Length: 62
Image 1 (cartoon, helix red, strand yellow):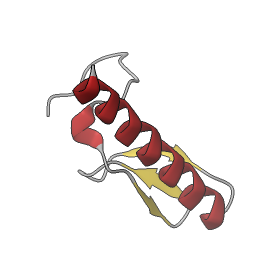
Image 2 (cartoon, rainbow, N blue to C red):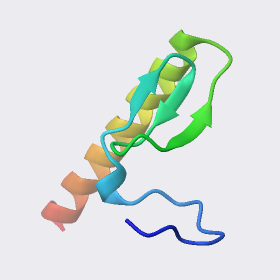
Image 3 (cartoon, rainbow, N blue to C red):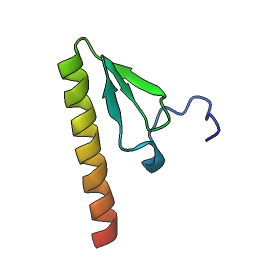
Image 4 (cartoon, rainbow, N blue to C red):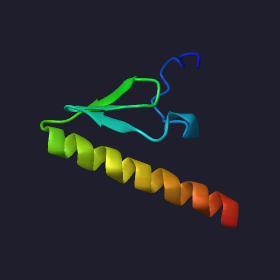
């Protein structure tokens, strides 16, 4: 995927995201966030994935 200058939004192709130590990364390994702890990175990734899944479900039900 080509880089988008000044575009900090996530695309559906970026999901699911993963926790890699304290980093939250997209499927292609791009770091999108750094957390203070591994547990926090896991929590952030889980919440982002849940939100993305809900948005996808909402798109299909609309």
